[in-house]
Amino acid sequence: MAKDKEKHSLFVYGTLMWPEVLRAVIGRTCCQMQEAVLYGFKRCRVRGEIYPAIKKAPRSKVVGKLVRDLTEKELRLLDEYEGGEYERIQVRVNTASNREEDVFTYVIKDEYQHLLDDREWDERVISRDEMESLLHDKRDE
Image 1 (spheres, rainbow, N blue to C red):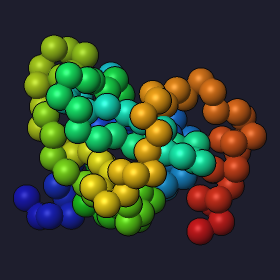
Image 2: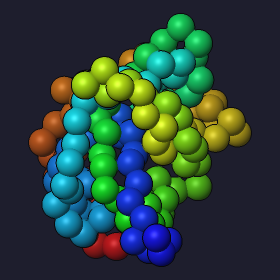
Image 3: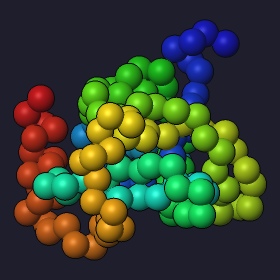
Image 4: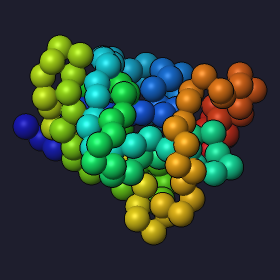
């Protein structure tokens, strides 16, 4: 299969769980999303930001979404969106259908972990205005 036709899966755990944000980044409504759990990581707030990051934490877990059928081009767009503080790595998640799958996700690089607040990030505390601002910033790029 040609590299540009290859499909990938991505575990998302922050603002990319919202279909409107994902659509703004990759340029289309995403196809398949399902709940998944990533063990051995913790989701933390990033100080001064509305989005989280994850870091390794042996006795923790992160509940998020599994996005399927992403192209190589869409992964590159997501790499740009995540920026230089994050790296895309391969991890194993447990899906809602109780299967383990190897997928990609984004983790904060070691040199940026000082930016993390150890408190759990909660999507429910983000205001509609903050969401609109995030989408507006992405549309302006």
